[in-house]
Image (cartoon, rainbow, N blue to C red; front, top):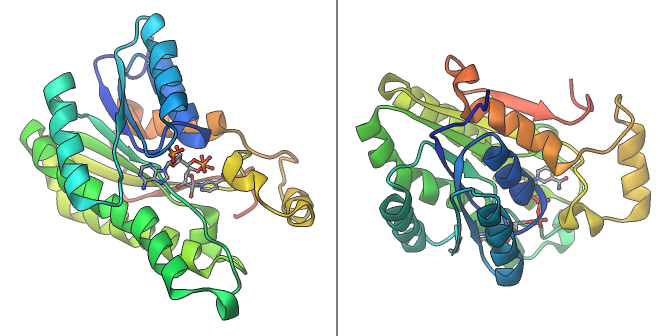
Length: 248
Ligand code: NAP
């Protein structure tokens, strides 16, 4: 049995990395998938073609999740194209790492805008249609860095911790409408984002993982399938850490 049959899933930042993995896994579980990108148009179109060829209802949209109006327009367009949105996955995110002493105001503001404000923008945009449906699952991708902090990532950690507080508040506000809001907090997942990290930092991280391997986008995607599906229909306001046991 497929877990997401007849569900429409909207995922931000799915041209590569974790977002792409989530989109593919959701599609594999029978969902129709609408997904966004910002600059990687070619990769996004490739993913759309790959899924469409397999008979999946899939469409890529260029949309900046950090822009309030673009988020509204995107949701309207997805509703027009797919008819509804059952699951929203806020995955788009960036890093601009530096020690606090060297961190510019611009890099702080940018990370908060792309990682945290985007979650507000997209959640605001889907809330009314989900309230009308009296059903919905919102999944926000945070990070273990938002749970425990990380030297050199004060901006990123603040944005990811902000996502957790935001999600718990939304879960409390919208539970009575059968709208669930949960967080997935990945640990060390191999993508272009982590490829930029220093080799020594990587080795240190790997040593701390009880399962003795780095994570894959599919590892994160499987947690999203669970939270997006009816298997988790009594679960809201939770932070599901997907990190091989690094944080317990
Ligand atoms: P990634 O490989 O750098 O991919 C980031 C994705 O976000 C890309 O598809 C990018 O689209 C999109 N994006 C960036 N800014 C956007 C915007 N303003 N509007 C819409 N899309 C935007 O990153 P990743 O490693 O897959 O990370 C995905 C999420 O997981 C992020 O929120 C990240 O913080 C979180 N996370 C990652 C790890 C990890 O170890 N990798 C760990 C914990 C949490 P374009 O390519 O089109 O620009």
